[in-house]
Length: 569
Image (cartoon, rainbow, N blue to C red; front, side, top):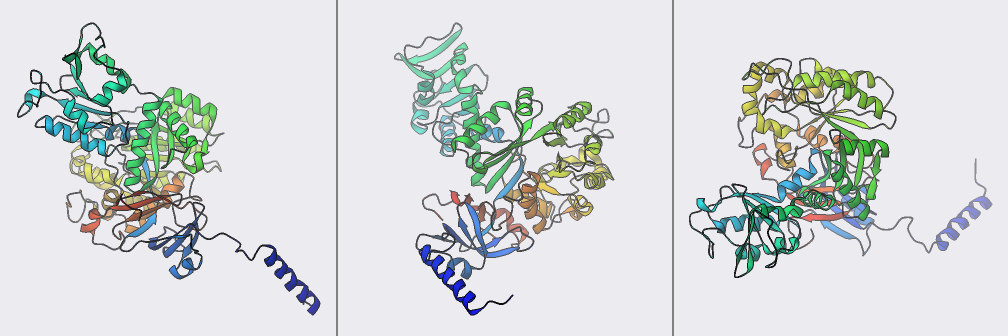
């Protein structure tokens, strides 16, 4: 078809009229933020980029610095990474959020040499927590200190120095014998303990000149129950403590591997109120009957609170752990021939659960460490994976497999959710549990699984291991302990490449949560989550990987953590 002169003139006039009618404004507003790279994208079609433009919490442009800057106006914030490197927001595919929060607020005081060191430890923990968070400590014993504390009562400390050092966090420190506790002033204020308070029968509120000293003995400890009660408020405080720690480690999405009913209630409320900053993909813990009943009736929750919370999976625990010799094995433990571990969840109940939840397409994620547990879970999965349903079943840990079972993962399209850091921590002694042959054939066989076409996603299992994606990456690509041994790595043929390790903690993690269209890679239209590290994990020498630190973390286009807290990056 050919335009006539009249048609062409009319067309040009229409264009001019449209432009004038819109005030000659561009079709889309300028970006809020431009980040000048380098950036690794985890997008196979565009693995690296020089810059990204962000608008409305999503990536609007991914490409060259020159083209990105053309989109800016005077209101656009431009961030130069300088010597740092950006990656898609890192995804930890297996953590325990409440456990992280609980560990953060708990202080081990057993080795404190004196009361001053005790106070220093509690103060250091308080510095990392938001005001109002309850701090718990255990294990102090005044008789083991080098010298008695200033102002002591028969060797026992009183609250004054602790209250001065930690004024904004309620502190409860349990004596090693469990018969006494020490509170700071914030804790006494929270509990309403004053000079007029009456101790329950059989208990003592220790006073000096009529004022409470913070020391409680015997049944008076019952007065502290509100500080230790696990309710919605406590659960929310643990989520809050955990989320800021996760963000400080570059984690923008965490898969909560087994959340209780109260944990899920706290997460849901925080998402709806806008106080949940980190993104959570939470698994309903099947052993919490209240949680399971509530959520099966309620149905999956997707992208609540501006994509901060999804609850669409169920966590089942099929066996125990290698350390306690409760991981379920086909053959006896090499160092305990009288045991093969235990099954901790009925296989029939697992099958019934899957059948019950298919209509709502709940994802089923099963903890299985021993080779027998993995084999049996795969057998239960098998009939359900033949239907044309995008099930994305997961086996959490998949730590020790029977020869041939890697192929079953691939055949059934079961995701292997693994923790490379467990190899670093456990491999030195795991050989005693399994023996060399079983270790070489089936333990931590990442390469064998990939070769079969299995999707591997990685996590840290925090707080079992620290929240440290850098250490996890190091373990994946070197298969060494964190002390650097052995130099060649344990069973080095099973190492991941650096690209594979990054993929496992970004786009693969997103896929494992049905979220690959929203996150996991730096692509136009996806959520603007970034993790910026001090070094290039793809090119630095292996010995330097563990020196890498998180420079800053971005969620939804906003910098939510910066190592240099005094100024934005």
